[in-house]
Image 1 (cartoon, rainbow, N blue to C red):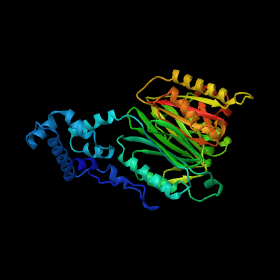
Image 2: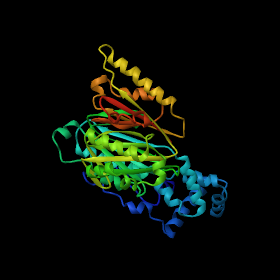
Image 3: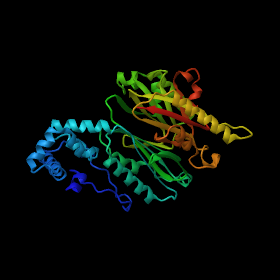
Image 4: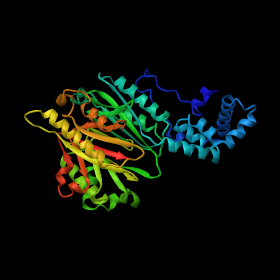
Length: 424
C-alpha cells in the first residue's frame, strides 16, 4: 500500500533510458491541472487513511486514524510530504483541511531543483534518453515551478554538418511535462553550465541538457516575451504596444531580465535600449548569444527571448573581462575573477535561497584554462552550495543598471563571463 501511495493517483512509469527514438510523447498537459472527481478524491483519502493505520501503532481502527488525520495536522503533513508536486495538487482538492496542509508543505519546498546530463559522444538516441529523463524529473519533482529554464548543448559536429535537427522535438516533450501555468524558457548553445548533486559543472562541446526549476511564490512573478526583428523595430519607435505584455506591477517591480538572442550585436543593443526604457535604468540584464530559441511551441533562429523576474528578490551582476597579460595571464585572470565574486557576495543581501546565472564566452573553457570546470570551482569556493546555471555563449549580454546607462555599447561583450547572483 505504501508503494501505491508513492505512485499517486496518476500512474506514471519513469523512463529507464531504453526507449526507442520518438517514443517519449508529450503528456496531457490539461490532465495535470484537471480537478479530481469525487470518487478519485475519496480513493486518495482512503489510501492515506489506511497508511496512517499502518504507521500508527496506537490506533486500533480506521475511525481512530480518521480522527487523528483531522485533529493532528502534523501527522497529515508527514504523510502528504511524501507526494510529488502533481500528487500534492490532487490532494489539495480533497477538502479545505488538506488544502491547508498542502500549502504548508509547498512553503517548505521553496528551493530550486536542478538537473544536469551530458554524453561525450554524438548520438541522437542518447539525446532522446536525456530528454526522457528530463521529462520524468519534471513530472516527479516535489516543487511547484513557476518557470523551467532548459539549456541544451550539442556536439560541435552538429553545427559544422548543418544538421536540420534542432530542439523542437525535445521542446515538445518538455512542454508537455510542465503545468500550463508554468513558463518554459529554452535555448540551444555550444556548451552548458549546470549543477549535479550540488556540484556545479561546465559541459563543453558535447551533447547535454541543463535545467533549473524556480519554485512558485506569491511574492515573485515570472514572465516571458519574444521579440522578432520586426517587432523590435516597432518597439524602438514606440514602446506602448510592448508594454501591454506586462502589468504595471511587473514593470515597476522588475529586477532581472535573462536574455537569449539569435541576432547580431546591433540588434541586441537596440533591444537593451528598449528594455531599459520600459523597465527603468536600474534593471539588471544578463544573457548571451545562442543558436536557436524555443518559445510558445515554436523554434526560432532569429529573434530575442527574455525572462522577466519581478517582485521580492534581489539581482546583482558583475562582468568579468578576460585578463590578457604577457606573464601569468591565468593567475591574473583568477585573482580578478575571485575579486568579482567576493564583491558580488558583499553587495547581495542574504535571502531564502540563491541562484547564480552564468554566461561565459566559448573561449573561456578548457582550451584557455587547461582545466575542466575552472570557473565553477572558483564560484563554489565563494558561494558553497549555491546552484550555478547558464551556458557558453557566442557573445555575452550584460547591463548592470545605471552603471552602463550612458554607454550603450557596454551591453554586448566578448571574451567575458557574466555573473548574476539572484537571491529569492
